[in-house]
Each structure stands twice: as C-alpha cells, then as structure tokens.
Image 1 (cartoon, one colour):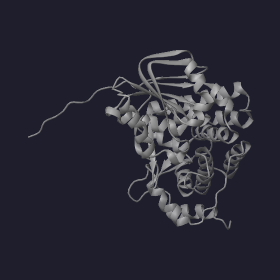
Image 2: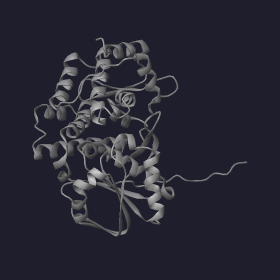
Image 3: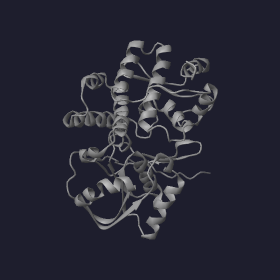
Image 4: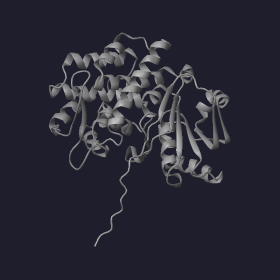
Amino acid sequence: MQVNIPLKKVIDNSYDISIESMQPTHLDTKVAIITNPKVAGLHLGYLLSKFTAKELYIITVPDGEEYKNQESVDLILESLFNHKFNRKSMLVAFGGGVIGDMTGYVASIYQRGIDFIQIPTTLLSQVDASVGGKTGMNNSYGKNLIGAFHQPKAVYIDPHFLTTLHAREFAAGVAEIVKMAVTFNAEFFEFLESADLQDAEVLQKAIKEAVQTKADVVAQDEKENGIRAALNYGHTFGHVIENETKYKKYLHGEAVAIGMVMANELAVRMSLMTQGEAQRVKALLKKYNLPTSYDITDAQSFYETFFLDKKSADSKITFILPVGIGDVKITDACEKDLVLSVLESFGASR
C-alpha cells in the first residue's frame, strides 16, 4: 500500500539584476537591512536615501569571514523574532559576500523561508556572491558547508559602493571575474588582458559581462547538479587555503586566485592546458597584485581536506580544471599521486 503526494510543479524563481545607480525604492512591508559596522558607516546613509519601507530595521553583525557562523546567524534570527517579522517580511543583504550568504541563509530558514534582496557592496559580491541563490555559513569543518539554495527577489549592483573599496578588496573581485572568463569566455579573457578595470566605464562593462556569464550558467543549472559546479574553478584549492589560514590571512578572492594557479598546474600536467595559457592566467592575476603562490607545509593534510568540499563524494575528489582558456572540465578522475605531486610543487622548499 502506498500514498503518492503529487508535488510536481514549475516555480518561477526569475529575478532582475540592476547594474546602475539605485533608483528610489519603497517596500510596503517590514524590512530588515543586514549589514556590518564598516559598510553601515560608509554607505548606510546613501542606501537610506534610496530605500524606504513600511517598517525598517537595521541589524549589524561583526565584519569578517570568521564571523560567518552560527553565532551571527542566531543574532540575526533573534532580532527578527524580537521585531515580530512574518512570512511577508523581507530582508536586505547590504554588504559583501559574507553578509549576502548569511542573510540569504537566514531568509531561507526563517519561518521556513521569506524573501530577500541583495545589495552587494564589494566587487566580488557584485560579480559573483550576490548572483545565483547560494547561501550559507561556515563551521569548523570548512566553508559554506551549511546552507541552502534560496534565490533573491532582486539584485541591485550600484557602482557607487565601489568608490570606497580598498585595493585588496577590488583585486579579490577581479579574481572572480577572471575565473568566469577562463572557464566560459575566451573573448572576455582577452578583453581583460588589455582592459584597465580602474576605468569606471570599462569596469561596468566587465561587471555586466561577468554577471551575464554567471546568470547564463545558473539558468541552466540552478542547484549545481552539473555545469554550475564549473563556477568553483579555483575554489577547491582555495577553500583549503582559507581553512588552513583560519580565514584571516587571505580574502576569499585572493585564496581563489592561488587556487586557480594550482588548478592550472594540475590541468597542465593532465595536458588540458598549455604552460603558456597557464602563464597568461597567472600574469592577469598578478596585474592586479593578486597572490599566486602558497607554501603547502603538509601535502597529505592538504589533500585530505579536499574531502570536506561539497562537490566531493565518497573517496573521490571533484576538480574543476580549465581546458585551455574559455572551456572547463569537471572531473573526479585525477590520480592521487598526480595531485600530491602538484601540491608538493607548492611546498615551502620549492
């Protein structure tokens, strides 16, 4: 005997991404802006001049990747309960990727799911973290291992917020732009090689191209069952680096930059990429003063940490490897000895 629950349905999770100065917006509901003290100090006044609501609350959490944890999530949830938020209420993620990921995660679990909007304030979050509905938090085992797919209702990418961005934060965002060009768009990569992203018009063009590239991929594979995993190029290695350094030495984009160089070395040894192509990627990263080296003190320990990656399964590690420039391969067929050899080449004694 069995009972079937027919739940097959099509849900339209489409939303618009605005890449321009914010227009005045009013929400006729209860809204909480989730931010951190640094972003609030720099830009909250500007946002409040553009953004109003029936009831508006500001919730601040500590700044930094190390605070993307259960304690910060609980702080946000507690405030929402205190202010009697309901299922028609809305959250606004106002900050970088840490704020965006946590706000989206809270929105996905509060009363089993409420709406949220992304207003990213760093280049990295504008071109990557705010788009695609990945939400989550970190724990002692690794990065983003707890989370949900929960799409925002809208994304507002306003160039104004980049005017106060530190050079390191800017470069970290460039790393994610390079990532998308290497994996999906050779013509875009060539554009980046000669482009000056310090020029506002050129930067806006690069942001639009990067966002469009990611949007196209997400539209094909929202829940990362296939091609969307390719957007993690550089992340498999980069997440281990972040874990080893306790999220304090490198910004996320910096760790991804190093991770891309490591992935490229593996791709070269597997004849997927030429040494010349790998050097072109490295040169573009260096153009923006991104780190491209890392001293691995224990290759075996580094290798074992790969198994905490969400893409890995059972005894196999999934690697995202470039195929030349403009194409990508997702594979779990990399021999352990070969991977260890690559890791050892990044050892302190090299």
